[in-house]
Picture 1 (cartoon, one colour):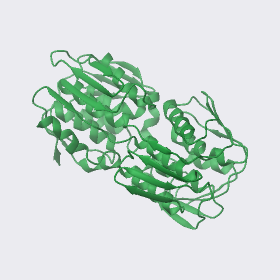
Picture 2 (tube, rainbow, N blue to C red):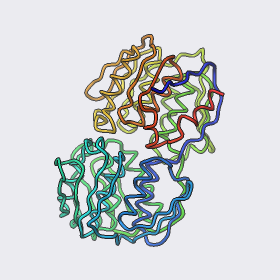
Picture 3 (spheres, rainbow, N blue to C red):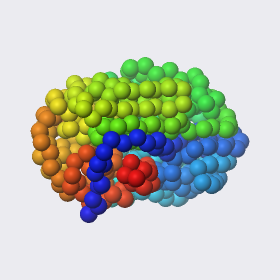
Length: 421
């Protein structure tokens, strides 16, 4: 077990965070499908990005990563044909994106992953690809990995549920410009995590595909070509939530450089939630800073987090420290993430004495006295990092698998150690 060190006094620190893995994986795909050579700076260092680079290499794309810079030799959409097997590890984003990318070829490509990834749902994406004429053959269980796809896709219209995962929508958006007539994605339910779909459109535009329209029930991508470029990945707003929450949880001041008011990530909204909870927040042109006077108690919130669902664990650990109740809404779909991010999160927080009720679409949290506990991370980097924030404020928090943070922020524990110096 890993004991999380508690912060003993008000903190003041600057904590850089890695580049956004969400942006990095989108940029890697756009670069792989572009004509010419792209250089991507400030590439995220985590397992998801490593898995994406490896999968693209498996499709014949030259991806050379040195430190935090990737050089990508674009294929122009002419990918190496199978048979080949791509292994995505634990990376749900990678597995879904490369399933669509692999479908551009005319010979079979198998996509697989580690056992926890095999349990995650993929059926809506597989069904959508089938409707576009792609052969999709399940290896073991329908709607899950491993799966073998053989393209190419044909057609210009597809239906997807909008209320399950934006990753399915993004996967199809990324290949849509290379289809003969582009693609219209009709959504059979409200679009959840819309900022992630808009993020996809922003990255595509940076690579020369600007004709993308994102509406509540429809996404339309015109035919086009990706253009090689030099692209810089901004700091990861989801990762930034943990050091910013650390200031809120313990009192003190944390600055995240590079996360600015011009961020294209929806999760940058987290700073505004901290302001509602009673923190002082400064989102500027060079950095974001959060501070809380230890004499000012955190306030609970009633908030719909459908558009910022990756931040639910971070907000939940602050909510159990708050002086008034919290209600998190609109996130029933996060049960299918790396973990059941409602059921598993609620169960682990209750080990600390927290009063947490798991609801169909979120969590209800009442303020109570907390105590130390041994917490399981459930193979989920976001649970581990959120519990790290909790352990900084509550004595005796221990984690069973701290290394799971390698998925998105491999140096998380050493980077946060600055607050203990």
